Image (tube, rainbow, N blue to C red; front, side, top):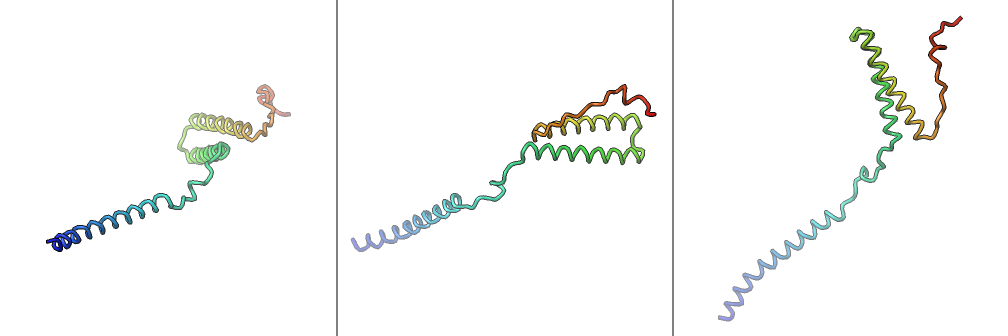
Length: 123
């Protein structure tokens, strides 16, 4: 009877130990995959700086101005609408350029034209 119990015990213990070994191997494989994975190069790439964002915004505004001029020539806008949109984009571009100058520390003091001088005709 003891031999029978030993054989039954061996039949029960052997599959359990195989399952335990399989679980341990699977756990080790999962932990290896999670913790030893190579980091993506994009994760360590520097983020865009404020200056890069400003340059991108400047380029976007210039593209919009170019498109607006083309669409105006094509007759898509009334002259007054075109001038309002152009003035809005130009003032936004000037603001972005001032921000770029302040970020770079390259503050050039631009002389502003006197409107009375600009309105007078040249001789």
